[in-house]
Length: 562
Image (tube, rainbow, N blue to C red):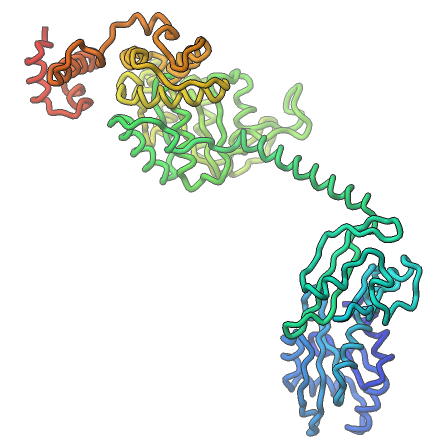
């Protein structure tokens, strides 16, 4: 506001009309002699405080705060009706006060006042600005611009006579703004902007401004911005790799009854904030489910931090989980380091292979879960944190508890919501979909074109027991793709012996009788399920989706008791 006052004072005294300047609260901060004389003659006294009190009791304060253009009003002032012109003082579209002009002034006089205000301000901040009317005639040019083109008397001349390669007259004709245009003046390349002045729907002039006076400055700033954007993008990507869930439930392939049940359960669990324990053999996709649960939770926008408890040496696990302070141990990073739990604040932390966590660390983990607070190694400051734990394991933790390898109290803290992912041999219906999906995924990664998997090869894939589950299936398909020669599809020749020499089932039976094929397949499936479940008929019936009575009938029919 001090900047406005200092500039307004310069021209208020020069205006040959009674004029005063008020701030937003109706304080008079500038008044010329004609206005002072006006008050003395009209009210027989000159008292600024008394005048302000009269203003505050009128509609003037509200008009000053809301008017955007010059407004004319009749004001009752100490019992006398006075005609006023009110012209807002604005900076960056924000009203800072108003000019109050007494009696009836012509519109041209008001325009002149506005130009004088603009001229004073622009000359103060050393801007290169030019203003033209609707005919392209210069009505104002800043002092700095005049010095650059080495001309003084430019007002009244057509802009093309004064400025090289100008387009101001064209902008007046088209009414279309031009921003960031390169213009050469006196051998200097600069960046300019040209904005039309529109009044009551008509173009009445234009304002031109030099944005960058030297193209080298423009290129320097542009280069810095590009480099900054690249740096930001790099760090965003790096941060995303470490702290973002990559997968959702849509990425979990399979339509079998077994996997459908697990996905439905996991989707329900995702909506809660309880800890989750995911069971499953190695390679079944435990981490994939953890990603999906986080992505579907209310914490999805927060960090997703992964810790492999089996891969981190026991002596480093505490500092990895809880962080450390500077000087906590030899080789400690300057300034210390945040632990995984701090990084997971407001998000989710995945403790993969939790069954391999050392017993002493289990005690410390239990305290963190109970108190929701951590203390860095070598520090004495306790920090409160908010996190959700998803733990995963391929070990039977209940058996580990019996062998004193896992704490029972920690187990119950983690085992709030349990999800058990079935092995691939128990969801054979998904092998075809998974094989085709993985073939496309791996082929894309390797840059290899493959049309598919032959029927004979798929037969072997479908029959194999897959002790390594989906991870083993992906490795087999990658091996097959690397061994492809002129073929466009994976064939039996590219499969490992352990798979291709396995007895074929479920597909070609050497018969066209549909009923016979169905019976053969049904017999083999029931026999295999009974073998997997060690003869447990109740469990087998549930997995097959049939009643125990129905299972007993089929066992008798196919003579499977022997």
